[in-house]
Image 1 (cartoon, rainbow, N blue to C red):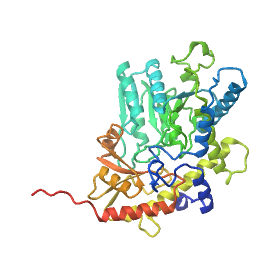
Image 2 (cartoon, rainbow, N blue to C red; image 1 turned 90 degrees about the vertical axis):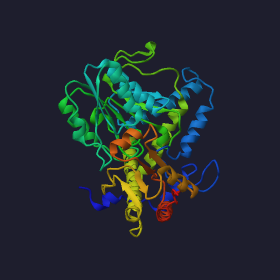
Image 3 (cartoon, rainbow, N blue to C red; image 1 turned 45 degrees about the vertical axis):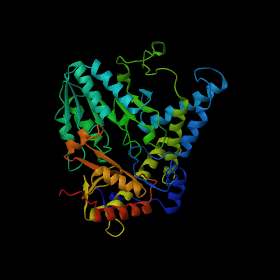
Image 4 (tube, helix red, strand yellow; image 1 turned 180 degrees about the horizontal axis):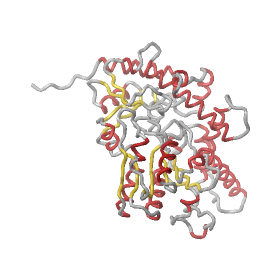
Length: 439
């Protein structure tokens, strides 16, 4: 059981938060309109680190090809080698396997799903109804292509997640793949991946397991080595980086299954996933991200080990996010979302530790899209998740709701911004729009 202090987290000091906010671009204004705003849609695309953008721009300006032997090429390769080590720090993947760079995390997940489904014996694939379409549709596509049964675990509408038993009861000795998300970008629910993997492998010890960590990577710990995961992916643009790349990890045994690669680059002990020339600028972004998290960790950590510093940084930003969530729900004087008349909060179990900083809510009298547009008019950016969207419909239906207003701050947001959001929400809840009445 989490203690109350653990559940509420711990805020950064005002001075530290000020220093943190200085490191992000456009943190309090719209870079297009130049108007002041509060950005609470970080589950859709997080704030960008200035250092990440600077690193990308500097390296992308070089015309040189990294697959050469001159000085500039060696410089690029050094940066990419360091970035691969940093990717392994994020994943905690030190025991082998290969890193997979692609244009998006969706491509990585789709590709790994196909490799397992087409080459591993079995009659079924197990996933959940909470999955992002990139993972769910990949599982469905390759199940249909290979003649396998697709089994999808039901969600828990109260928690916004999927119970361990709901997944494991679908697994048997004929399951070739388990594809599961670490955390939902609708509900914020963090899955108990350790229990899921442990129980799944009790049923089938050699089961291939792929994990979508796109939502959770900027907010929590990934442990590939500890769980012996076969594949995992994240997206740098949701992790304070830039758009245009997705990063994956494939285990040694996954690498030895037939997959797309350049035959000339084959290593008989560990097949590469490389296709074409790499983009060094995207690798430089990863190191900027890990540098930032490690620097956060230095306040609580006296170590030269980069993974140790990284874990300390993740713990600190997560503690800040837990504190922000509790503050948003309770408010400074019991005027938080839980206490506002006309506000419904979905998936509120009372535990802010096992959730990413995402709140799904509704306002009486407001359509979801209508409410989001009104927030925008008042200088606050949130997002609607509704059944008309292919990115939402299956998950929402499984959770038993037609939609929600998704509010997703980040650790660099402030209590003052939440105060303003709560004031606007209270006013909107008290003044719903007048609907046209039939004569």
